[in-house]
Length: 251
View 1: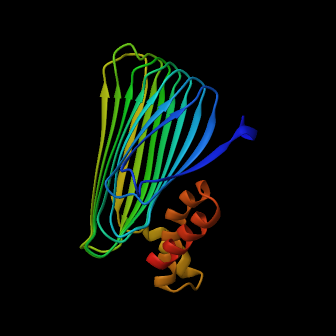
View 2: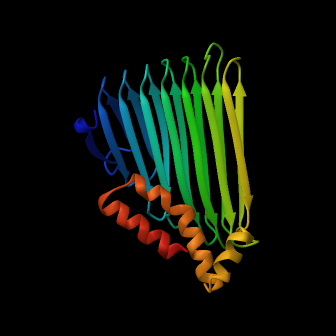
């Protein structure tokens, strides 16, 4: 199926609301640009695969995303937020069909006095559905981050799986992060888990680098780069280069 991969860049310059239908057995990659006050509705048909890549670069960004997945459809969302300024993202993925799957991975760099808020939810309706939320953030200065993850496994969604993992590093005592992982379980015979970690840089990691003769500030930059950089691997071309440059500049 990978040989039939199609790529499309979505611009919201003229129309702030877009609707995309991913056809049966289709494999598509979507890149979102110019995201200010925008709304995207996705419909994934049977056996389709959509890789949605979201890049926040401008001074202010906000997006509302809704997705409906039928039988055996897969939606992978990769979100890189290295913008300067306040930003928001609201994502709601409904796993309607049996064996529908969705992953949401994000990396966020929050600096100065910026505030970033993300609300990411999954609704499991079909049997054997799967959702995975994984996010990493670095907060500096007096910045604030709030992440709410909601995984709802509804009645009769047997054999479904939901997982959440959110980690945030606070570079400065004046920065803050709040993560609310929420599991709503209305069905037996399922698997669900969540993990959340918010704190300063790992002292053991710092000690190891310092013992190798690396200066403190350089050690912090190395750890931060390794923390945020994995999201870059899901992008390509000029966007990938821009992401790497923004991470290096931001830290």
